[in-house]
Length: 383
Image (cartoon, rainbow, N blue to C red; front, top):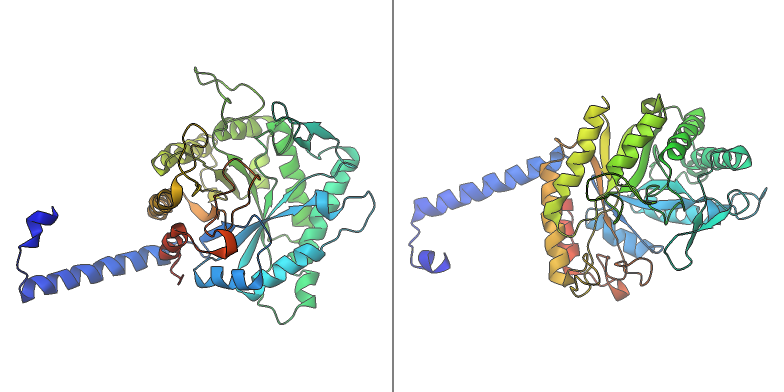
């Protein structure tokens, strides 16, 4: 193609046409970006970000960060006052830099729920069950209410920080990947539906205008289905887990405003199948008005080695996957009722998961990778 066009002459009319087409293309891109929901592009940090790092993220167009409000670390002793100091610091720094917070409420301290050994993990621990009964349920309800009282629409945090931009938390995500054994040792969609109902009631008792979003469900954990397509093992496909949650919890529809998905796929071209599987289920459940949040999505910049890590793409490959995925999600945002998209992650952390050591948009010393520059193009900021 290059050789065929190198000898072509471009007269004034041809140049004018090129300029017009370029302007039309820019206008179309701008229109597409402006049509997206507010704060559409987000990120998930693995480690606490500094004010300087958050400022750079904001300049790059990041509108929101997704962070854990982990009950385990915030109230490690029964009856102890919940320690919000670390969360306060994070919320203050993010808000001061114009970045909103999407929290996922998660975890259960050992005094509330016993720890279970994750089968086949080599000794990893996770809550044996979700906190839905007796003292665990009461403790969870108190934890959730205290979070909303502090950071919600009339939260005490905002009263204590009157000079900060007002970015109260109005959307609360409940748990993280409850269909995956590393976040609850025995995933159970019936239990999860009960947790959603209890959490929604606790949140609405404090802030009636707030909304609940389901946990980000891991799209297709390995080994979750037989070859014939039936569910098996501890882990669940997101679609199967969600379907079972609806069936086991009548009236659950009124307890949440949106569904969330973590569609980790080897290639971005495989995203539509996982997303449309969820959208079709919502249609079957006569709940198709619900929005969809992609609260984790990403690939690693570590050297490609499909035998070890199918998400490792190298620096250029990570940027390529981001570009393809973000273009697809932007273009299908209306059809898929997408509300927000969060790249996992901001930074690299070795050992946190099989690809976490290369998942960041930034490497050591907060040095930007090629993927960061692609992110900024979609988010409309400056690197």
